[in-house]
Length: 173
Image (cartoon, rainbow, N blue to C red; front, top):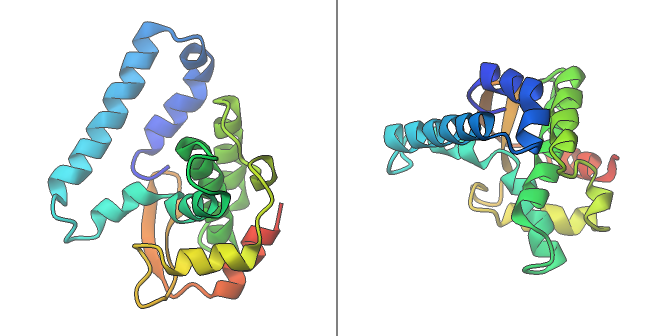
């Protein structure tokens, strides 16, 4: 979702092979993922350009779910997968993203066995989650900031997101 639209397409077309643990597609998925992350870290080693923040797509929501649930109650990947869905929905609400992209992302995550509906990981108070997010490392002076997509393969760090909009996304199913 964050840097490589062709890779997203590739994952959609190879999901069955990946789930069947076929060695060649698995190796390619790991290599491409690692190369993407390494390229970002190499270009923004000291986190000075903001590029590295893109690696946190879904994490602001995900970390809030993890914190609210209590340490060790949720798998990190599950919380981030749900967080990706919430981030994408926030991007739609802000007019940055088409709903069809959210559906594609949800479909891929679900096919890979990851949750997309926050109700599957627990019941959470939206106000508590927003308070937790205000303490997130990406928040600046208590101002909410999120890594949000505007299309598959491109995300930006968006500041000044109104807490009421975040609450709407958290309350929606």
